[in-house]
Length: 538
Image 1 (tube, rainbow, N blue to C red):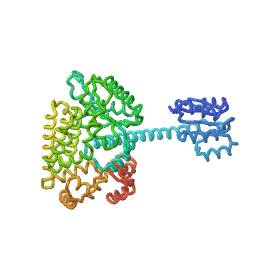
Image 2: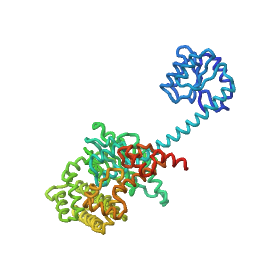
Image 3: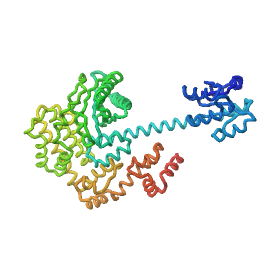
Image 4: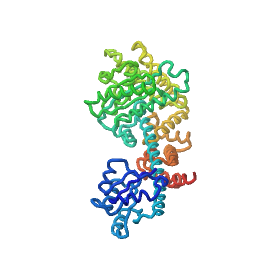
């Protein structure tokens, strides 16, 4: 039923209109009445909006024209029918100038009222369908945006970085401007869902549904606060991470405690499972995101289902100054240059025997180095991902080692494995190297990619890489990237969900006009024309 408001200063006229037809049969219900414009506006302000307003044009205090004008300003989507007499020409002219299209002459003729209501019902149904479609589009847009936001944050804490300006630009594109600040103050929280014995009663196929429910609950909880950004690793679905921007230093500690307590309670109440939390140390600056993440993983590794301590270990980052971004880059270069001697020397500098390093700091530094190993393995490994899986498992179990000697021995073993993978790729016939580079491009096409930056990243001569790439793929590097981006764009256009400007941004074009030019050159039609023709063919 569509809801109607009647506005007329004469009760008799209102009663006559109500008695004129069977409103319920016409699909309407008269929900409210008012005797003038002021009273009607008050009702609109105080309650839910009706679908239709039928208003007289001559009324005391506030006449129909003033009322219509106010409605157009405050409620532009509200449909209105104007009642007027034959002598109200000047009023009607003003109403038409305000955009009113539907009116009835007094006395109201039953057949005219029924016909007009039927016409408006069709319009209201079309509006409802359009609003529902737009709502679904917004939901799909938000879901896609969330997936890309989570993917970016996970890249930043796990993989090798692009330049800081490139990262900030991508954050802006994905509506993560809160993270793109030079003076970013943030903190990580990690939560793992632990299924009690007998919870699933051997129905192992239900575990995936439980993981999905856990992830959805974590995301829904995070949505209550604008400064909380959830993300997770697809290979470990029972664990979620949260990057939390510190907006109020004084109240942040209390906020973290509230957030963790609430989430722990929700997980127990709704999912009937236990949870273990890890609260990382606050960090300052984008460059320390990996440290913040590693500190939350360290805190998680020391937690239990009964541990409700909300204070992070505030000494971790203070005691790990030796593992700066610069030190990490040099350590990474020793691995990629297959220089075990230099790697050993750098590792000894980080784990100096002259320093009385607490075990929790030792474990933290090990976590950071394993993350670095994983980033290198992901870059150079193609096809088989067993090494990445092995490194992830090492990250999860590093806390179980009983001595520093055991941890160092494990790190040297992992370094050998990663170096072997780098060596296998770099010193192959060239095909393996190209496959690794293609995989990297496929995963990072939305960023600015240049042949020189890839040559530097994979330790190759730019001219050699250019020739090797074309020889292996049959196309130039530039043509490959362009085709990849435009193919992704065509798929998004066919989904008919995102705006053209959003699609341009998501596939790596900073300018929508440049995107349109490139698309038309490749497909022979503009993005708009491509979408329209595709929809017509369905």
